[in-house]
Image (cartoon, each protein chain N blue to C red):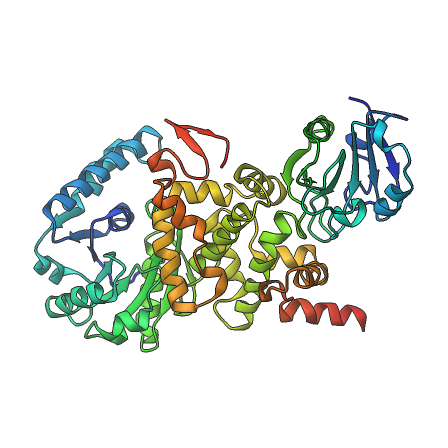
Length: 215
Length: 293
């Protein structure tokens, strides 16, 4: 299936060369708008109805911020997406594909095809802040940082326990150190604002790192 | 490494007790299992023999070693056999009263130097020790399921556990070939404190219609390299078991993320307990797993 990529600023999902980018055509049934300004670019895009699917790269915002919403009946051929990456780490193979209640199934299928054709894996989710992974792991990371402060165990023992006990490739402390506590602070702060749930309130250690970055 | 420990007692021959006894016997310790139920001991013996037969099949253990390991291991319904033990690891039902009754009986038969270890995953070591008659010689040793395969042991001193007791138990754990980590005597220790709320959060995503179970599991496996997604894991563990552990954790912490989502109780009422009933977050036919929802 042919697809076209429109760049609108730096992309967190596709910051460099990737088979998905190199395989793009000058035009196609599917249009993918990537970059930090993808939403604004979508606002200017005039050829929406003629495309099977239009995919907008999302940051922390919901897809509805670009498409509008309508009493739970929203949905069209427009989807959101984000290739998951933690902070400074390389993007993973996972694409979180965001749909709305009445998104056209043909658009979902087409979006899945173009990503999977480039060796990426797709997880479909509703249009909620944090999508799947951030919504699940940020409270866990916050709890790990908080329990480290409270002396539940050393950082090394926390990491060892969660690696050996649960088969996670990395413990939470080493993972946050590798990928960036400040970025964790930003993401979890935005989720805290979205949900008002204390589990998302940035942990002290993340806030301290963020403050040091500002100094 | 010398620990002074030569004979190990395991009280309780359910899944965890059987696994712990395998670990101890395999490490060369004389291992005595106590359970008040004759049938439980017989079942554990059969499971143990089956486990070692598979270990030989997979090349993990030489055939010649099996007889020696099994000779290290014996079971009895007589609590008096625990008199020979230098350490007794209890792996009985997660109920403080049950553990106190057991430990006070053990206190009467075991020599004064014997250490008591609890495999509890949710109860307080300090509270367990308080009913033991020797609260300075009690330590938490939480093995992971299945104990005979998982290396990790969470070790927790109670408020009155002596330094020498903790060190002796730590050295013993290493002599077992396990990997000890130290955690405070805190509800859920490390593993369950993080795992139960995380799994509850995954259930809440399903409940809220954020994504289907298969998408949630795929996201975590692909995005973060997890060996298994939380909903696959819950199906494996069983939602009834998850409910028990989560309720115990919530009762101890009152943290909102530990509270069991309503969907769990509905699924249990419907008989959707996971793999063991053929349906949970996924449906199962034999070893095949289908869809989600």
